[in-house]
Image 1 (cartoon, rainbow, N blue to C red):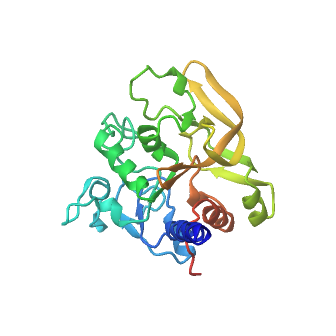
Image 2 (image 1 turned 60 degrees about the vertical axis):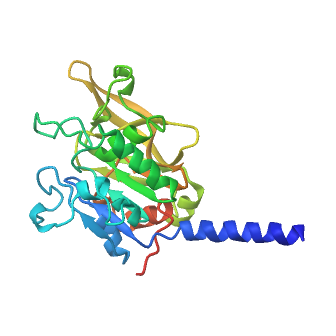
Length: 284
């Protein structure tokens, strides 16, 4: 009888884990610098897009923010008619670099841009979201959202210079535009790629540099990067730093990349995405 109960318990947990890994309802927030939707389209994965442009679609000038009816404000702050959070209608949120509300200032502007990272309610919403087994996939400048909600997970470049207790948005945005040879540090990803190193393209300067991560954060890719210290100190090199990481948050998962997915070799980007975003089920 005890064996039957234990077997049932294990089977139940297994079913729940399998169900949690199936991301059927996918939301993606557009941004000015990245377009993770390119991989999703190639993989045949449907998603609902929410407009999040700061000023213009740098990755695709033909896209207009006016063409979207759904916005990032509605996704992160909105409620359904039944009173639940809009974001909880989705299994996973993809948030592209260059989404508004996730930094200190708008790029090329003196206007503030901290509507979400400076809002404690958004962090609470994300805790609720991940505690229900939902997940986040974020790139580059969207790292400020990780800093807001999970400040101990990632140590960003120059973060040690921030005043204690003060917001530190945009501080890690110091990377130099270049190609970086990334060491594949995840065994399964090595098998799927058939190599232990890949070349990543960093198409914009001032990308978000990670220095280190907490012990419970998984690192999939590492490499040596050049970054800007300050106006007076010039540039320096950080060796073997994380470039793609993931960690558990509640029952969900948070994935963060320093690079832009749409700028990478399409085949490599898709294979890496399927490894780190395990809940995706490609139809192509």
